[in-house]
Each structure stands twice: as structure tokens, then as C-alpha cells.
Image (cartoon, rainbow, N blue to C red; front, side):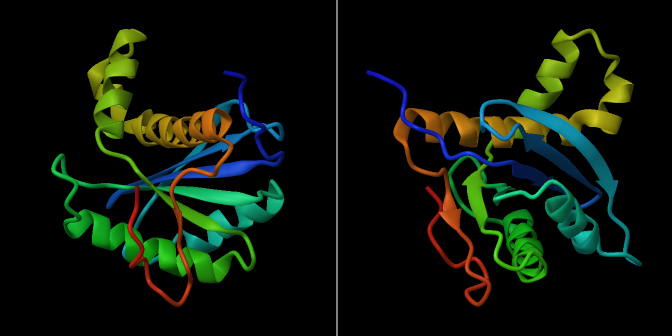
Length: 166
């Protein structure tokens, strides 16, 4: 079966955690995800403006946000926090769609990849969120390439993330 056509344009991938946010991007052809940054979250500052600036600077056509679910598929406290953050982000990135994708085990896979690459376990914290963001985005790109449809579910600014996420 031939590969489906992938939309052209840079996409941003986000792994939103309670302490850090991993940011990734893809090339304009939508083939390869690469790390961009790890943003430290703090109670004083909200990194939404910083992410919105990255989106504008890279002229991104879409933002892919990983939604952390339990292995059973349930949405716990972390998922609700990500939904709230993604909703604020949707407001800040006027007209750039935000899509939610299931990210179960992405951080575990990121830690495993870092270990396999020979990186010391103590140094994982510095980059694991970027690696997780790359995995989230690359999975979305691969899904689109194989199906011809964008991955995940769009987050509507006024709905607050109530949609079902495949």
C-alpha cells in the first residue's frame, strides 16, 4: 500500500509535564521530528507565551500535545492539567490548531531510548521531556503518513478539551 500524502508545514510537538515542557518540531515536509527545547515550569510564569512565540517564529501549522492517560485509558489529574494548559495555549496561538494525541508510555520510551544511547540515568531529566515531545510528534507524523489523516483530536478553545481522544 502506498504512503498517504502528508500536509506540508512545520508542526510543534509538546510533552507538558508538571515541572517541564518538552518541545519538538518537524521539518516543513512533515517527515522528521527533532528536539527544540525544554521549558521549566514555575508557579510565577506561564510558558504559554513562550510556546506561542516558538509557534509564530517557526510558522507552525499545528501543535500536537500529548495527553497522558493511564494504561486503562482513563484520564486522571495529569490529563486534566494538560487539557487546561492546552486550552490556554489554544487561546494564545490564534488560528493555529491544537490537536491532542494519546501519549501513553511516551516518557518511559524516552527514558529507554536515552539509556540505550549510553546516556547516564542522572542526566535524563535534562532532555527526557524533549525526547518525549519528539516521540509524540513523530508518532503523529507517522500516523498521518500512513492514513492521510491528522493524528488525534482537535481541541476547540471554547470546549476545554471535552472531545474523545483516539
